[in-house]
Image 1 (cartoon, rainbow, N blue to C red):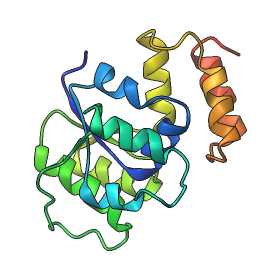
Image 2: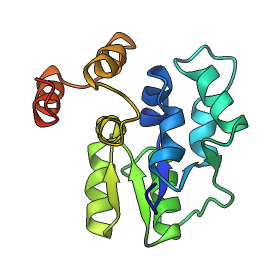
Image 3: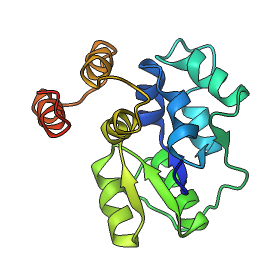
Length: 164
């Protein structure tokens, strides 16, 4: 088990929920957190993809709600979910890992010295940790859920991990 705390944005949260991957988070990271803002982006009753899995993961404490949500610094170029996740990781300090797919958020995280990965990175880590036998079927289920990853990126990832 890794020693970092992971801070998960809505896009990877939904993507992982759609492929049954929320249970990987506590096995890959010491603790996986979402902010209240991110939780509110996937409220119950809207029939969003992964909604039931996300509620269940919160109940089972596979993911946890971040207790405090700092208001600063302000990141006006980001949506509020991404900004809240970035602020929570920044507040946590060393050992924080940001799980986010948004490129602008990744750029800011890099400038701030916060490590990051995305949905695809979590799938790769699940494969390396032997939580899944193969990544290809996971990426196929992700695509079936209308999650957007370019086919070229998926093929490059599969080649890198020996599933080409």
